[in-house]
Image 1 (cartoon, rainbow, N blue to C red):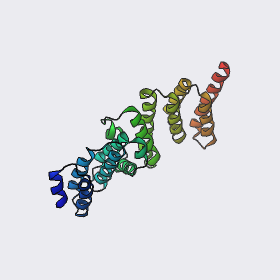
Image 2: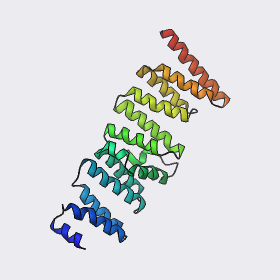
Image 3: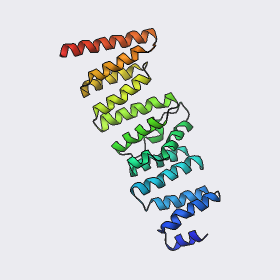
Image 4: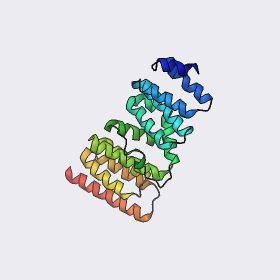
Length: 229
């Protein structure tokens, strides 16, 4: 193939690096196509590198059945160009990658070993939560990881509170979420937001014991806030 010979002479030829993978995929040779795209990626940065990472994520997921590698490439796309990567199809690949995992498999096993920078990690987790609406058992650990990233890595107590309150609204029976929300509301100086979350939860139909528990917590919060004023 002529493009292979071009790359043997000049491994930086952009036309060959862009065209050869398409031809290889048309021939059903996804492994060789991935190798060329990876070669091309190493010569790029920013948006262009993010696009190559996105292509790799889709190929690893859809053509090579490697969901974990697909997720790694998708996160690398965010590292290369966070805002552009939010709109890349790779995040659909990320979402499907999560769905490929068994519901009982801890989410952290897919990404705790990745060298993701703090802000990028929070961005990646936010996008995953926005895109993946399935498997509630998988979403809760994502909320917790995002809250950890916001609180402990970015020292953003308000953002961490927003994450935990969103999780508490979706999982009102998870009392540790309300404990953490109480702690973060104090750190962020936003007890009113916690009170509103209690009111929203209590307007829904809840098991009697849970309704009593949340009502008591809301009452204690109100008493504390009144005492401070």
